Structures are given as C-alpha cells and as structure tokens.
Image 1 (cartoon, one colour):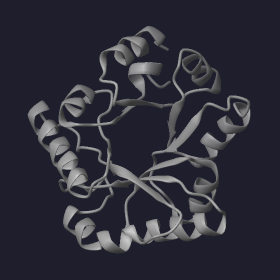
Image 2 (tube, helix red, strand yellow):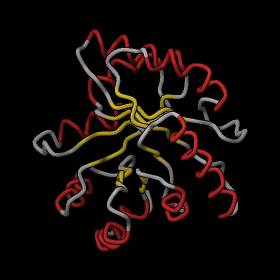
Image 3 (tube, helix red, strand yellow):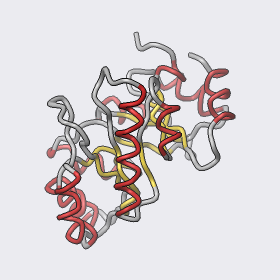
Image 4 (cartoon, helix red, strand yellow):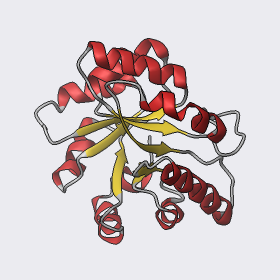
Length: 211
C-alpha cells in the first residue's frame, strides 16, 4: 500500500487527467485508505468481487465504481445496475444490450468503447474501421452516455510504440468528438498522458503488488 506514491502522482498529473484506482484483487480496507486521501474513482473487473466490496463500502457515497473487465453477456444487467462507468465495451452487440437494459432499468451509464489498435489475441475491442462505420447507429442508442475510448496496448512494446498507439486512440476519439481516453496503466502512464489520456488505470502503483 503506497498512499505517498498516490499523492505524488496526483500532484504531478495535469488537472484534466483523472486517476482510476484499479482495486481488483485488493481489500475494501485498502480502498478506504486511498479514498480517505481524496480518491473516489475505483475500477473493478470481476462482478462478484466488486459487488461484495460495494456492499461493505456502501456508506462511502462519494465512491464511483468503474467496470473495467471483460463483459460477459449474462452479467450485463448486474453491471448496469451497479456501475456508473463501463470502460470495456468491446462490441456493438454488447453495447446494444447495455442500452436496452439501461432503458428498462432507468439507468444511464457512462460508456468507454474499447478499441483494438493492433492485433492481440488476448484483447477484445472494436477495430477502428468498424467503429467508424457503426458510429451513426451507436449514437442513436438510448440510455447510455458515450464518454470516450479505452485501449490496452499489447505487452512488450517499447515506449515509442506505446506512445504511437496511445496517440492513435486519442486521434480516433477526437475524430468522433469524444472527450475521454481511458489509457495508460502503472507501466506506461506517462506516455499515455503525453498522448492525451484523461483516465489512467493505476493499480500496483497505488496499492502495491497483488498478493
């Protein structure tokens, strides 16, 4: 657990950049410690683990929960009901389902569309061409607020390659007039800021290594 590291990063980043503390694998007590020093946005990737923490921390009304994991179709309703932000919408079909469930449940989640800027079998996401061709249909979906794009770069890239992919993501977001880019993690957050990220997903830098 490293609160001083958190504060150092917080003071270093531009005012338009938000930290998303990736709390998956960490305990509610650790979330509480970071929340006390000003962090309100927390990212989880497994619904059941997140839901248990949400129950324990329900009195902390300032917390905004972000879903950042791969979305399983059978969990969409639960995700819509319990998360304000969804960062990992990786297909048009899932987006349609989120929209119709949000309409039924009178919700309106903030959506980040996951884009895949380089072939990587371990990652999902919209190919940029598909996203552009579907854009008009996407904009017509009800009960969702499109906030931006999210990307996860393949492992093992150089700093320069990371930067280039982040810049592509920012460029695509700008062309679609989306304000946010959720990109950059504990190992490449500085390149992400330089490329125009507005949400950094930081886990180990804040909480330390997962046990």
